[in-house]
Length: 333
Image (cartoon, rainbow, N blue to C red; front, side, top):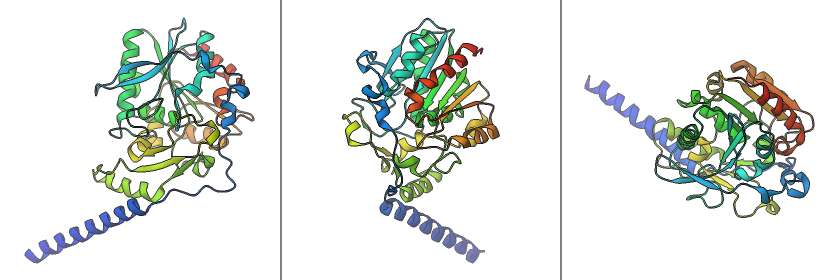
């Protein structure tokens, strides 16, 4: 018995040593993916005011709300005479400003009031750019924000919308313990997972993940070790001419993980509320034709493809608006 016991201990020790060695090597030596010369990145020029006819000087002023950890996070409020309230989540790398053309449309047309938070780690002056305190913190922040909104609008129909990684966060939120606090979801070109059928390599040149490092950190997370989650796990390729100092070009592992579905298949299965998914056929990051077959496997959704609309165009292109108008006008929850 003593020999068996010692053999088992020896096996466990050797296995643990190998496991930690592999994880450590991945974390230390993992480099970011190289951008392919055939990847053209996202069409950021569509967000420029001279291309989108957008006057960003009309942006609502930033306000702030308090989260459960006592911190104050910024948001904008687009008022409207409507019992529908939308919390619209921005994508990776920037903040809620670029959502203005669409959120202004929804509010000015009386389709919904809109709130656009600058998620923790993003915005004009975050406490720690590109980082959060723990992996589930964006969900907790969003839940706190929703509680504030419901206090101010107790009888509202609450919709969570998200673009790109913001759509991924919306899917993650839907699969969390908070998901049923929402009456409906709207996803614009939502991110699901790096290897989901909808993905183009490295999101069409936008993302440069430190793949081996992510593997090593995930290995440690799987056994409850989070001490190294502060390590940078992904970088973003925003062209220099579109930077103004408020961009967020790198994420730690914990923020990168927080901004994506936990398990997109399970999270989508959790969505029983009305769900609208919009994606352009010219999306540089995702394969538009794969959205309907992927979503239909796990949930009931209206998936609409927008001809010749790009990844950023799904926010600023006027072709999006009639579809949103019809969906909001017909939404009964």
